[in-house]
Image (cartoon, rainbow, N blue to C red):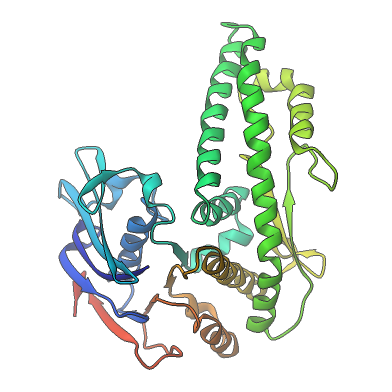
Length: 362
């Protein structure tokens, strides 16, 4: 699904602007702090219902204004879809073709992959960044996974409430048994889907890594569960249940669930070396781009259409050889919106240029 145009009202440093996009390649030009990243952020919000930079919608409202509104027109095989996301008076509203909707209704509707310099946290950052990567990538391809993940989070929340109540001796710990069973069953389903996704994309990540870096490496993506096993022949639900049962007293003392997909991680290995610990910054950035391109390919193959790809100044940290390789690698994607502080070359001649100065479209 391609974005055709967007209208922003009181969003970040934009007051009231319209932006139109080309069908394939779009280059957003402007000096730093003019609004390039803000424009990408607004598209991301239309695609998944939230910002990739800030959890608080109140922080996205233009200074001294009471609300923000983002409206976008998307098109796929001749059918147009209007998406609107707004926030004001501490209330968020989502509308699809004029009808009220929920954030879950947006996930996978457009299909969004975004990459920025901050993506280095996918390799160097805490496990939470990598869990978010997995959950967003899989959810956009599978409503079943998204629903399972939401059910898991609800069960986990209820179990944690009961563990805290048991910690305070307001209830007996046995009252959490039902929610423990739900956490185990739903958690095992989430883990299986995550492991399968890593297995699905690893060969593509390896090819992308070699193409961008110019050297062949043995790339592996290994799921890293905390405190329980997932090896071949292992019943993940039984393994997770055993971990929870063995540490039930510790969980009560701490007041929260210690094991499950909400604390798991995955590792990206190059020649059996963890890139997070032993990779150079160049290798780490190459790994991130390889992951994002593999995510795009997987979504394209699974859904029969490529997602909208948002690239925020990703060429700035690359040398000429890697930049050229990345340009070739992304040339097959359907629609790309790229930001840069200077003119950049993409593979197509039909590049649509958008200039931003102080929140104004030039």
